[in-house]
Image 1 (cartoon, helix red, strand yellow):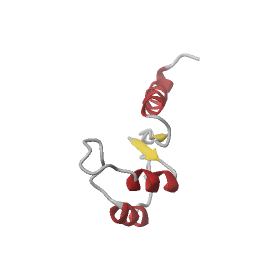
Image 2 (tube, rainbow, N blue to C red; image 1 turned 135 degrees about the vertical axis):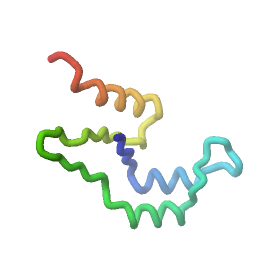
Image 3 (cartoon, one colour; image 1 turned 30 degrees about the vertical axis):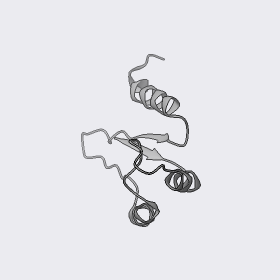
Length: 83
């Protein structure tokens, strides 16, 4: 699971700077974001007897997309890397 984190001011700035009808725009606006922000309770992991807890990759999406993608890959592969 990947949890994308971004500072509130960055999200608000991105939403207010969207160009009308641009292909990469979010369909959400500030009202939708504000509601989701109020309702989000975070990702919770649990472990069960004999099972490993779920792994969560947390990334800061305020950075450029290529940096964020590299971070996801790095974190994903880190348990498999040799010391």
